[in-house]
Amino acid sequence: MDKLKQRIIEESSVMSEQVLNLDGLLNHQVDPQLTMEMGREFAARFADAGVTRVITVESSGISVAFATALELGVPLVFARRKKTLLADPDALCERVPSFTKGIVTDIMLSRKYIQEQDKVLFIDDIIANGDAARGLVKIISRSGAELVGLGVVVEKCFQAGAQAIRNQGIRLESLVRIESLDNGSITFAE
Ligand code: G4P
Ligand code: NA
Ligand code: NA
Picture 1 (cartoon, rainbow, N blue to C red):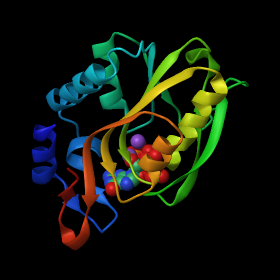
Picture 2 (picture 1 turned 60 degrees about the vertical axis):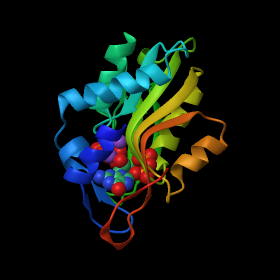
Picture 3 (picture 1 turned 30 degrees about the vertical axis):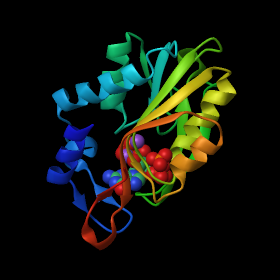
Picture 4 (picture 1 turned 90 degrees about the horizontal axis):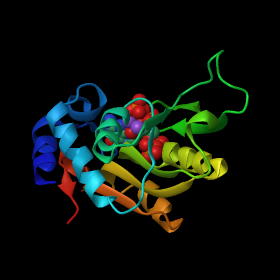
């Protein structure tokens, strides 16, 4: 998506050799029209996969996951970050470390919203080390549903997450791939 690349060039800032601030596009503000285009692109790439549910983790994956689910005509389910007092007892939970926040969090998905016969498409904003992604992949696997693939808006190729997911035999599609953030500038992968 050339338009998305252009917007990233214009509206993101390189925080370090590891971290790109994408607040203006993904993590603090969203452009509904651009987000809908991302959703259409994921829906097109997974059009033949028979998706019955789109799944993400709160919070920054929700906007693009919503756009994808709308386009595919299926529900969007988002895993919650922590157990609430109202959480149902047989919710599926995984503990994951968070790269940017430096803490561990529990992610939780109720069995009510994922069933064995589901074919789920997992959508997320950014993949870095892939800890959060791995947690949700485990939850999907424990639910008995079929994971048809993972769609991420930004793949940071210099961190291990995306490759590790692909090495598990999971189809991973990204809209933009970043090779490096060295010397304060963004190098996109071909
Ligand atoms: P992930 O690759 O599965 O996302 O897991 P990882 O542990 O690598 O990253 C954890 C969190 O850090 C994720 O957000 C991820 O989007 C965010 N993150 C990783 N690298 C960058 C980066 O370069 N820029 C920005 N802006 N975020 C990055 P999260 O904890 O799921 O929080 P939320 O944004 O969904 O609330
Ligand atoms: Na994020
Ligand atoms: Na996320």
